[in-house]
Image 1 (spheres, rainbow, N blue to C red):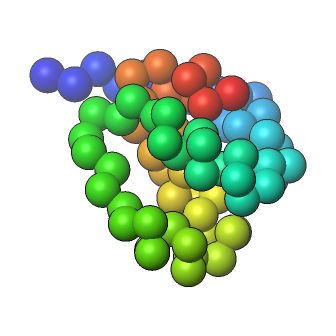
Image 2: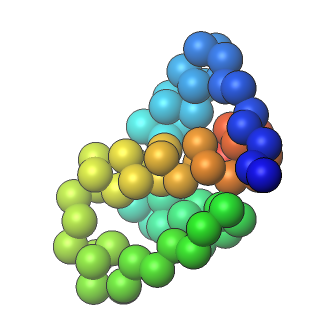
Image 3: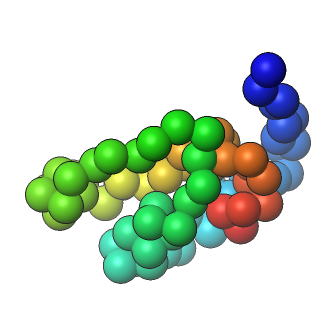
Length: 74
């Protein structure tokens, strides 16, 4: 059974603020380092073509599904 980590509003706000300040290279490095509960199998072509704001959204969603939740992304 999966355990669910409750994310506080403050944690979520800090994560969103951090992601907003990151450039594309930093976002890609973070995505590559995430240990999610499911495989992330985005192709390099997809990641190169996706707009940066959408890449941030993908990473936010992935961060919410890591074992450490927000703390592993912060």
